[in-house]
Image (cartoon, rainbow, N blue to C red):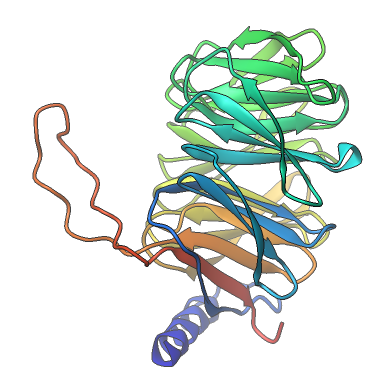
Length: 345
């Protein structure tokens, strides 16, 4: 491992020395955290205030302490879990369980299960807590809709027909929520109280929209598209502010608004670092090599560390009817997190 870490550090240094111009942004691979289990994974959710990191994985959610980087518990069972939403003021968290169309409600302190909510849709993927309405929304990938719940009582409040398969979603905390539709390559804005769509904004030339983040202070949406472009939108009008080149197979964007940086995780094995001088001027500052498959991430603003889910894979099986591009199997015992941090941090 030591040799591979040294090689990684040299590679990052070469990338940064090539004129990408990041101030004090020499990043290094700090290590890898091994986690049990052999299932697939999806979103990571960091809670910098509570110093916790939630890692979705198969039928459970691993919970780590961000200071010690050690596991502190597990939320299970969560069959086919995709995402985690947190409601700190309520002391509750919520998971989207894609394999059985449910939401697990859990206690943020004990991680114990509080209840189960039934989703009116199929394959809940992203999940969002909106503090403005104290509602939880699942975004159901196979039924093209969103299910709304009262986060306090668990009451089902209705559904929103989105007109396409949803991916990531964000809230501005002021009465507006946003979700990107993957194949339609657009961002939908909806009213979380009325459960009504209020705008649709195209992302072209961006296509296959899979990642979304919001800088609420500057009213900017960061939409990552698998056509290798990051589209930055005005969150009030939908106007395109910038279109920047990124790596392939993007799946997550994390923001550090204090340092004016966005981190774009791409499954081809890179994280693109985006910076801005003001809300009108954005640029690619650096390309950090990670490893293939590292496309989901959580970010700790306190330490500047990035956490990316990874595993090792065996050879892909032969194509079969109905499965022209079968996925390679995950090698047992290989799942974990890459930890990337600023050098000297």
